[in-house]
Length: 285
Image (tube, rainbow, N blue to C red; front, side):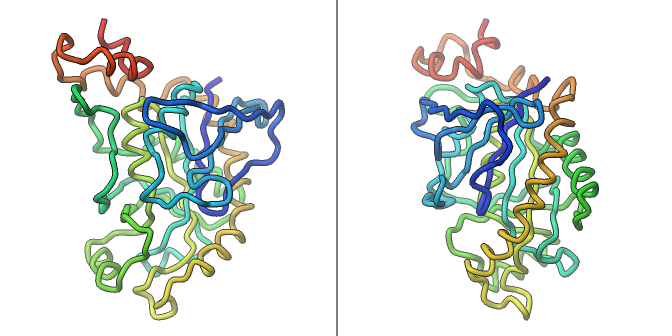
C-alpha cells in the first residue's frame, strides 16, 4: 500500500487515531520543515502528518519553508499528499462551511522559491493539471460520504498574504472567474510535482472574502471560528479518503522528472547532485 502524507492548515494541527505514533525530525538541504513529522498507521495505512504553520500556528504563509516541508515528505517515502486548507470564497454559491476540491491554481505570489532546481540545475515540468485527478476524486467522494456540502473543481487563487485581499483585488479575481482564494497550496503543489508526489487539496471555505456585503471585513476570528467548526468534518473526510488513496496502484506524478531535467549532466555541481539525489539520482544514470 502507498504511504500518504497530510499537510494540515489553519486549525488542523494534529490527527487523532494514529497507531504506533512517533515524531520524526527530518533534515533537508533546504533547512528545517515547519515542525516535526508525526508518523504512524491510520486505519492500517502508513501516514505522515505535518502542520504547515507549525503547532501553535507561528509561521506566516510567506515564511513557510515549502521546499523543506515537501522534501521531508519525500525523504519519508510519501507517495501522495492530501492538503487541508482554509480558503475564502469568491462565488456566492461556495458558502462558508462548504468544502471545495479545486483542480486549478492561479499564482499571485511574489516572494517564494517554488522549485528545487536552482544553483546549477534546471528542470521544466509539465504542470497544466496541477492536482492529481484520482486523489481529487477520492476527496470529493469521501466528502459526499461524510454528508457535507462539497464542490468538485474550480480555481484556487494563491495570494501572497499574510494580509487578506483588498476589495479591488477580491473583485478583480471574481471578474476573472476565480472560485476560492488562499495563501499556501500552489507552492506546495509545484514542489510536490517536482518531487514526483501526487497532490490534492481539500479546501474548507471559511468566509466570502471582502467582496461580499456580509463579509466586508474578513477577520481572523471569523476564519478560525468557522474552520474549527469544520475541522472535525475535514478529519472525517480524510479518514475515508486515506485508505482509498493508499490502495491506488499508481499515481499521476510518477515519472514527472523523467524528461524534465535539461541541464547537461556533466555541468550539474556535485553538491546539487548529492543534495537532490533522492529526486534525481535515477535520472542521471
